[in-house]
Image (cartoon, rainbow, N blue to C red; front, side, top):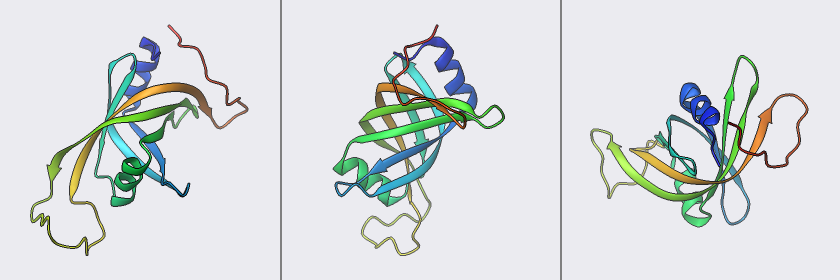
Length: 135
């Protein structure tokens, strides 16, 4: 599904935007980096995701990942199912029992998603029809 051309694009851009929603369809947007494509069906990325993103993917394990080249305004939107989230970093002073009083994430998360559809993502005219894998 993810072509070699797309893989190179994703890993060179190396940042994206993750859209999630809760069961009441309230959307939330997060930024991510460290994008890797381990195989043609998966993308892995990392972020200090806020609590809302993690709650959303627990309730509804689906996200949209947008990766765009800021100069050209061209990119891809990946419609995905979340397969795994793993803690990869913890801030110094982490306190598991304490309320999240400061309001910022204390844990860095690596998220693995399975790509189900790929759409063109651009500032110009485009359709919302899935695109075929390119070579």
